[in-house]
Image 1 (tube, one colour):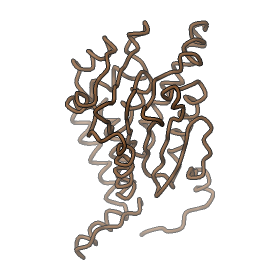
Image 2: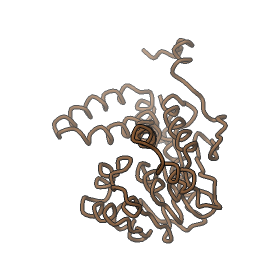
Image 3: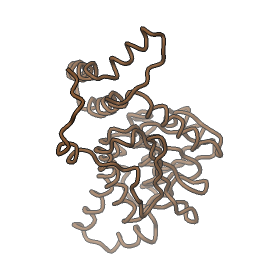
Image 4: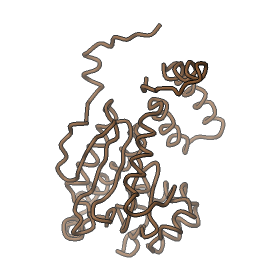
Length: 284
């Protein structure tokens, strides 16, 4: 039996509309249930600050409860994606900190990646120009990556005297492009060009610079118009199955798919097929 009424007190604690969220340290816009984050410091190639790290971390956390945002696009203003942590506003202050405060910072940045992976919305990164350091991590942590031939992605931690194991890079990057290729990028910090990045599987596709954001938003809109509850399950299983055996993964997927078969979207798809129509999914 389908229950159409949900107790408002349950909704109040588990739904948090974000279409009207007012971002402080980047741009945020929602159109047709697609939220677009634009890193907006183009004069410095969109570096992150302590404030923008924290706000991004918190926004992705809140997206767990947002029923008015079904897919996300992340991009940068002015022909570049993100140049990483701001040299003057982050790197300089870090040099003077002791271990407890440094750990506070590295845990905060890692929490951003955790929240990107945990939010149910698919994330499409639109990457042009410089994509370095933490910017490369944000791109890596997205579900899909649209790039350009002129994009330059660099996990440059080694070049500033740090290890390549930053914000989950040693866990996630090898799963995207393979252990050997990830090792090369993390040991050397060299830039990965757009065409090479597409060949290696880092980019899902390359676009013209003037079209990359629109193409990413089109993909996000298609995902937002799909069976979004099921998309969230797919994202969860893609992430969780990294730590499972094949047998565990098959059982977990059997249970997950059973849940999806109970959704109204599954019934809608069947009824549309019988009627020779395109299903109109509603995410429930």
